[in-house]
Picture 1 (cartoon, helix red, strand yellow):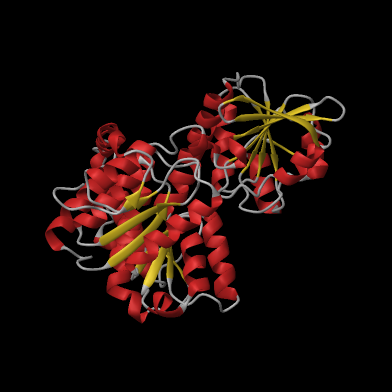
Picture 2 (spheres, rainbow, N blue to C red; picture 1 turned 60 degrees about the vertical axis):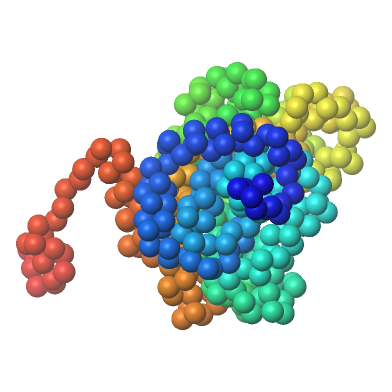
Length: 424
């Protein structure tokens, strides 16, 4: 219930709402930029009457985003973008306390996951918000009036942007998408500092291992991989990076990490973390040479980065040892430990990114939704980067909230930068 209105949704237990509201309020304390946006949205109502369907990780930080969107006048429905990332108490609070239809249960099976997506789409959205592009894919497959009614969408994560750019390249994308993941105030902070810290946190909570002295193999050196490598080294680990991109591999070397092919790293690594956005980054041939006790985790969006079906076929015995730790015993007695069912370990076993970095990511989401309302009808179906003025404004607000001021160019300096006549 929200007031006297019955709100639709499918959550684990509405009696968890009180605890969920506490978590939402705690996260809000560390999200000052989104708070400022919510206050403006409440006054200006830039999303008034617009129907919006969001498929995101249902966490306390996400709750603050959808509350801000509703404050701006949007008719919001929310579903989970990963079966293991939902905080059930937060989902309950969104329904019971904030009147936001929410369809998310931690541990939901695949059928329930897609049933929840279709339930969120029942409001016939004009704007979509995605984390992994499952909503966009579902709308395109369903087609018809549902697709025709969408003016634009946003995408939160690297994996989703990859999928959407592939759709655009094939001519399959039928409405414009703003790639929130490509904003500097998203990937430079959320992907690097957020994923770095929360991945280490998730693996630690699942296993309680000592990081110092461990050989940690980071598979992929994009912004997320950079963050994981940085934090693992900070914990005293010996970091090995594997890459397919020569420029990123060179950067990893310059950052002080050891770089080698994954087949070589598989023989010596203790902990493996995939952050590639691609399938079977760790494949059967890699699993076959890992030493007894190797720990394997994924921090990419989908659980395809590790070839789990191959691991299951290789195993002669399987044992759930701890919450989010599954042991696979191979024919020769070696044991490999898969964490969090191969899903996003930072959300499967922990709480995801800290609120302070999601503050910037979700500020991008909120302002991109406003941008779509203003510009969506004039945009061709394609993937667009967040406008630079939005990105810079979010950075400015974040600095302001931290009490930090910076310099400004003088008129003379601006003129110099805009001119070409001056030289040596």
